[in-house]
Image (cartoon, rainbow, N blue to C red; front, side, top):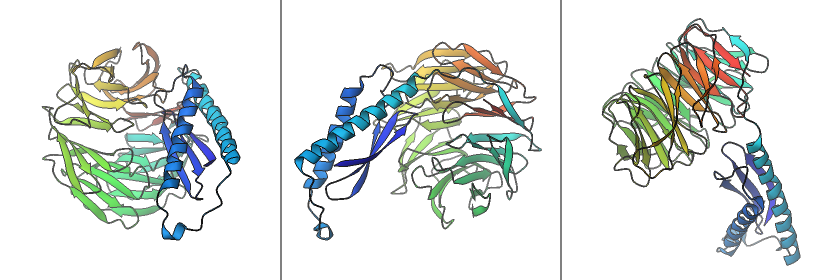
Length: 450
């Protein structure tokens, strides 16, 4: 085995080794390092990763040789294999040390207004960054999506064509060369991020479309959710509908792929969430337990847990290994739970509520009641959106009191009030590296903080 490249992922920590087997084929092996922290001993970890990669390479070498693979490269001598292993071990150590240095960097706790974008003529809906943080998307009631260059603080493209509110916006992560928008006109559209050209439009829904996202691996499909009670999957190349998911008995407000894109999670006003097997086009399980409409549902990073938030004042954690009942319950809010969000590693859950608070919960406990880690109290109106910083040390909230706030995750202390909007802050987002924040408001503006 000869390693060619090592790719790093900072949030959550992980790496991928691109290596060439003795048969001459290239492989890419991913490793999630969710337990990596500033105190982790790097050498044993690098050794473990190397041994696992070598074992997989040797297992492939021992597998039966297919007819077209009979002509193989000359095997590397034993001395060469040792040298390759030593070089790979050294490169792994350097990569892990770089990840560790990133974890040790001080967390940005103070942001300053960089630019107020007022290019929309009606209230904003949702916003998001691309992976580099150099561009962001804003949706609006003015029926457009704006592609904004965050470095130059200029609008690159105005995406026009929808006949109603643009509610959902998103990039195909991590490449971010395509954009998907979902609209109250019942359609979704995919656009070129570089030119702003509309590539295709997806029809079929008969009511407002409130969620749309790309397949996480190939961006060759999108999933949508609609107030018509269905979720749908479309082919991006042909614009053809691939699946119609019709099991819900009321409006569907979320459709989210798991990490490998093989499962789709939907949440509905029928009080349930549903897990669909994308490959077999079938309903795998329906999550029952809430007594009111769902406000959101999300996967953790690994796809092993699901969190649901509901207007029944609770949030629930579900384990994919046992879906007949919730694993844990968060029941300390005194009003409707409006949003739920996992941190990057999936160890913490944040919830926010009409009771003007946000809360952070530890999902690693064994109790049926989620252990509350911190309470974020300070907003004077409902908190509708919550998201963690990439490192998980900070929590960002958006509220109807016209502000966003930054909180310390561990203590619940308010670190900063992001003030200045003249209307309800409907959406907020962190950049991938955590050095920039977006807030979007019903005052028709989007504020970019650095």
